[in-house]
Length: 434
Ligand code: DLL
Image (cartoon, rainbow, N blue to C red):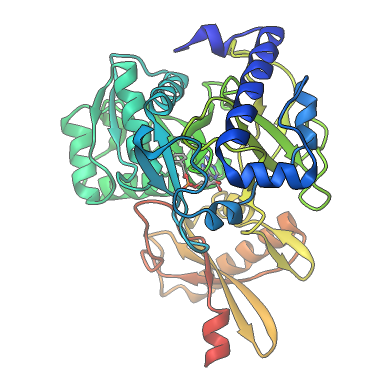
């Protein structure tokens, strides 16, 4: 543990720290961010609390609030105190900008150092930072944490996959940091180069930034001979370092000395009991640049009740299986791409590369899963291919309780990503225009 004085705090000590930090944050935010002041004034809420439960009176913050304040309207300090900005990917609309003070960067480095320590990392490790450097928070976020822990830090960023493999080998990398989908591509590229990553010094991966199934974890662990842990975060709240799995690989410890987590029903917006799934909502406690009050992440998860045997006392959130805005409704049944992935990665003969393609057939939405067959597939065996296709379709239907058309596609025909994989291809607007 990198900071046991926080990570293993008693629940009473943690709660009093949280109350004190929340009081301070609310006062600062009300004072300095007009958007929050106006919202609270309009709702007749004073920015003070006695207990953590008082937070449930406060209005939520959503991505559109950030967009409306673009670029700097949500900053709670003057720009001269901001030392870094990052931005969210903007795949679903206008980008948002987040700013960090010197203290924010320090805290972020501590949280990322905790994350690397969660993967068993120490100052003796060599960390290859393959997340993208730039406006995306992944690269620099992990970088500062790795240096904070004292690791040798390789700032290679994403891309040039053969070089990634060569550096893994030649530099003796022990911890790889990238998206899980890119980790699979790196492993496959090594195989094509005639190299076996299991012979390298690599021992752990800190993978995140996108949903990935447990089967995908097992595959990448097997291909690389490593322990793969899931790391979670989002730019609006921090970047990587919000929560991380420990060696138990059973839920992600939320850095609760810096963030309050709530799980709410996305329809009623009422908090749900521990153990039940809902939308994850975060309130920052220490952030100076952009504090957020009850930020609705759109990510679906739950609190895992009970203590963790690793000794960390911070509560754990379940791995994020998807976002409310990624959810497909297929003939009335809610489907997340990661559920499809969990099925596909359990079937020999298909590769862990897939895409859910949405199109229009007349006025109806049509959903089809494209999945690559394994590279050693014999394409002359049409009967075998058809039986594989049927097996995939049947297994999806029995796991998801709805049947979805399946198309087998050739190896390497689905576009690879060096960052977040694009699991859903939406052609509906194009179909309408046609
Ligand atoms: O993806 C921060 C990050 C970088 C996390 C590197 C982990 C590693 P954004 O680009 O703002 O930030 O995207 C945040 O990505 O709301 C989730 O929907 C998704 N996400 C992030 N981590 C995970 C994960 C970074 N471990 C959005 N599992 C979040 C599932 C994840 N989804």
